[in-house]
Length: 338
Image 1: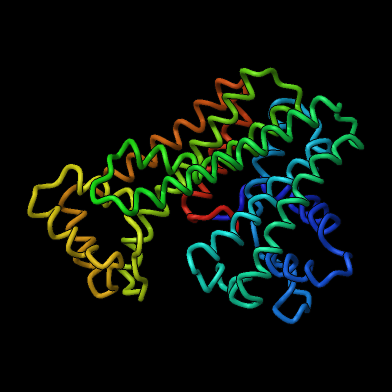
Image 2: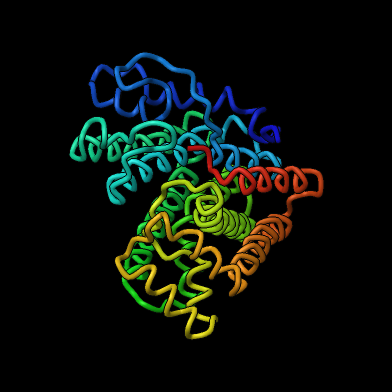
């Protein structure tokens, strides 16, 4: 399945705008950022990124669908991508993840302290990119409103991450609590991207809120699909991946399965890490409890919510079909581009 046109038609312009924002600065700090963005290897030699910038694509796509001028939304598209990369750098440190996609994480190469510096600088560059919208004819009031949207989304994401860590320490977690956490943790930045696109297009408050909700639902769908893939892909391929978190299928099974099944699942998570050799058994237990199908249905419902909210925002049938293909691509590939 090829990348959707909503991504490819602005891809070169997005990459050029991102590089203008980050590259060309003499301080070595920016070499770490270039590495994180996929433009350089560990030694600083240029490489060609093979990434899909989903957040800018959503921001620009919403602006375009609501009859806004795409070029005026480019600083916001850059800002939300930089903000996303900031969160990834910090997430890799927080989770102790040695690899970021196919390459070592920034913290693994340069150490946690320097990675924190790089992540924080990406956050600052994101805000500065928003402030630069004035040169695109965006009013001061809109710039301030956009900054408030991005800061609110950041806070929502951090609260979702905090909630996730709390839930992982609990024996029993309700589906409602998990879905609320996932929508905040995974949906906040998607919601930010969509709302910024609507704001810059000149949409009123109600369409903006619908676009924000659309993005949050898309983020939720991606999070749930990741939960599914994490268990069943690893169990099927025999990949030596240790499951260290309670995902939605596990939450559902613990909440609804017979006591004997709950006990066995709890035993598999007793050490907080599921040994890779036990993954096939975990997958079998979850299948017997109907957890996989329930999670697939929940992913589909979140995806439908994405499209319904965009329709409520006033997105016409033609662009709506394009957003549908965009969502299907992301969910099928289980990625937001990193």
